[in-house]
Image (tube, rainbow, N blue to C red):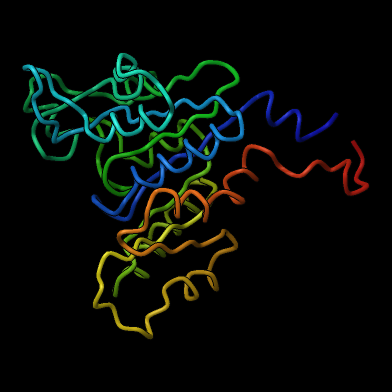
Length: 244
C-alpha cells in the first residue's frame, strides 16, 4: 500500500493549543487552514466553544470562530459548524457556560468537533492545555479524545521555557503527539540574547517556529508552508526506494 495515499484518504488533523490565552492560537490555526486549502485539501476548522463573545443582533458572535470560518473559505452561514457553543462572559468556558445556565460536557465538545469524511480537522482549544473547557474536561481531555497531533503556541518572552516544557511534559504523560511549537514574540523590548527557539529545539524533536508581533498572514503562511504541507502530504516511501 502507498502510505502517503493512505494518509490522505483517511485524513487527519491537528489540535492547536497554547501555554495561555491570547498567545496567537487563532492566527496559527488560520494559517494552517490557508496552507492546506492552497494544496487543494478540504479543511474542517473547529473551535467548539468560545467565550467572551460580543453580542451581534442579540446573538453571541465568536470572533475567533469567524476568522477560522473565513480562513477555511466557508460562507458565514457555516459559522455554527465551526463554533457550536458561543458564550458571552469573558471567562473560562466551563464557568461562562455555567453562568449562562447551560453547563457543557466533554461529549458535547467531542461531537462538535466531528468532521466530514476526507477532511482535515484543525481544532482550536481555549486557553492553555490544562485550562478547563467544560464541567468534566480540560483542553487536554478534548485533545486526547480527538487524538490529533498538537501544535503548541506560546508567547516568545522571558519565562516561556518553563510553561512550554511543562506543557510538553503533560503531552508526553498523556501520550499526545507534538506536531510543532510556535513562538510568537509580542514584545519589542525582549533581550536580544534571548533565544527560546534554540533552547526548545534542544529539548524536542518537533520543529520550533518563531514569529515577531506584526508579521503578516502571508509571511506566516510562507514560513509554515513546507512543514504544514508535510503533514497532509508526507513523503512517498516509493520515491525513496522504500517498500510499498
